[in-house]
Amino acid sequence: MSLKEDLLKEILAVDNAAVLRKIQGVLAGKHEENVNNNNGFMSVEAAQEFLGGISRGHLWNLRRQGLKFHKVGGRVVFLPDELRNWVFNNRKEQKKARE
Image 1: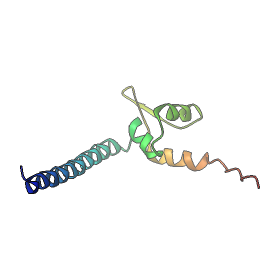
Image 2 (image 1 turned 90 degrees about the vertical axis):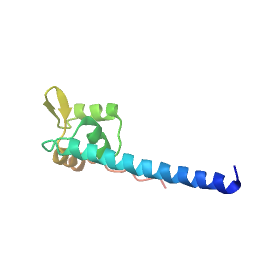
Image 3 (image 1 turned 90 degrees about the horizontal axis):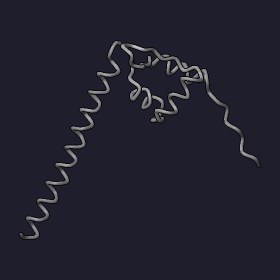
Image 4 (image 1 turned 45 degrees about the vertical axis):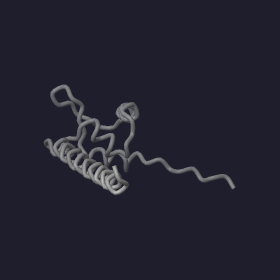
């Protein structure tokens, strides 16, 4: 193959990868929309993302500390407003750095 053909294949491969990432992002967003719009409830995964990408274990610890959750058909779900309120009501003060 010539250099021109190699470069063209590489450019097409990069563009295809970018397009694929965009498609995956759109599909992931649609899935998240469906999860979040399911009667207003959020799945565990959506709640983790909503709270800044925390781990599942950390989310469970927050539940033990009073974070409200609901069970629907045996699944744990959250309401976005309750998550938001919990964050604002359980804010920790930052310690000042020693001088």
